[in-house]
Amino acid sequence: GYLDEQQFLQLEDLQDDANPNFVEEIVTLFYKDSHRLFHNIEQALKSKPIDFTKLDNYMHQFRGSNSSIGAMKVKNECNQFKEFCLAGNAEGCIRAFQRVKQEHETLRMQLETYFKVLIIYNF
Image (cartoon, rainbow, N blue to C red; front, top):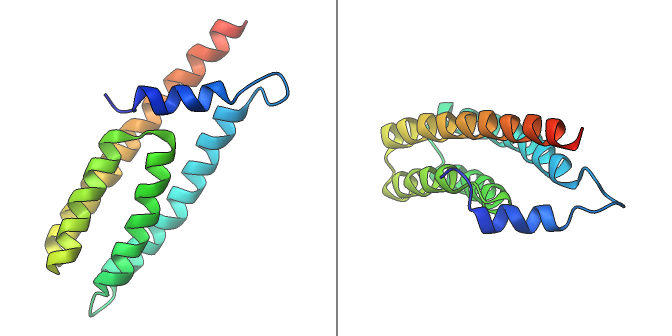
């Protein structure tokens, strides 16, 4: 339920003998980019007054990254965050961002399990 199976299968289909670690590389880049965007969002949430347009732009980038790997639950929480940004609701943004980070961490654990199983399967 954390990943759009079709989207993730499309990533797996791009993996071949010439690029055997493609999915792992994409996921690694996703998490590096997520770390950068989380930092930007946290800084934007601390600024006074909050620039909701900037905050929404950061979350838009993050939501796009999630869509690229099929992270459905995280993407859904990003949509909630966007609604709070549009309403200019700082407290709502802060609560939604906590849920985004929680779903992001849960996804990370799921993907770690996936890669561990993949390694075992390939040996």
